[in-house]
Image (tube, rainbow over all chains, first blue to last red; front, side, top):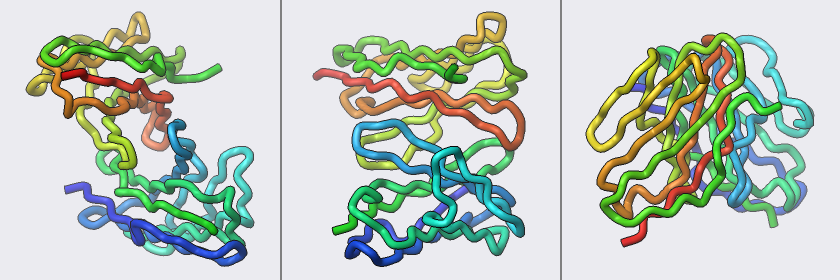
Amino acid sequence: GAVVSQHPSRVICKSGTSVKIECRSLDFQATTMFWYRQFPKQSLMLMATSNEGSKATYEQGVEKDKFLINHASLTLSTLTVTSAHPEDSSFYICSARYQGVQFFGPGTRLTVL
Amino acid sequence: QKEVEQNSGPLSVPEGAIASLNCTYSDRVSQSFFWYRQYSGKSPELIMSIYSNGDKEDGRFTAQLNKASQYVSLLIRDSQPSDSATYLCAVSYNNNDMRFGAGTRLTVKP
């Protein structure tokens, strides 16, 4: 149990386009999901907390209009990187909490050309 | 002030040795403690959880918790090259607040 999936695993896009990343809890319901970003050789950075049925809570310094989060159901949260630029290239990882433990998705590697 | 602190390493141990990874956390009401392993280019995976003072063993891994000292550690016995990864300490303060340390990079040399 407690499997979290992400799609796509890897995406390459042109600068200025938008990219949507999906995060699903496969065998449990998650009222809260978390979105992280990790640059090479750096720590996990929490971007936002996604709450089912309500607005996401963003960490300081994360632009909510650039990183749109939708948590429309108990098993799906999406992160849309709008007007992506090369500096947005990173490893994006979601996680969900199950019985008090956070389980991570496999991550999405975004490359913006 | 960081809430969860780890030595970033790198920590290098020879194959077969014991690797000791340490983590301290700030003075808050803390409930649960976790160790995650993250291989390069992959997402973190849970390897141990500990909820009460003392030791918890799972195979070659032992987690140790000392709430009075606000200290949690992970020991890896008979270290293998495949244990080379970054180890993240995480502390849960309540059901909706979990904080991660920056991670300690471990290298096990054959």
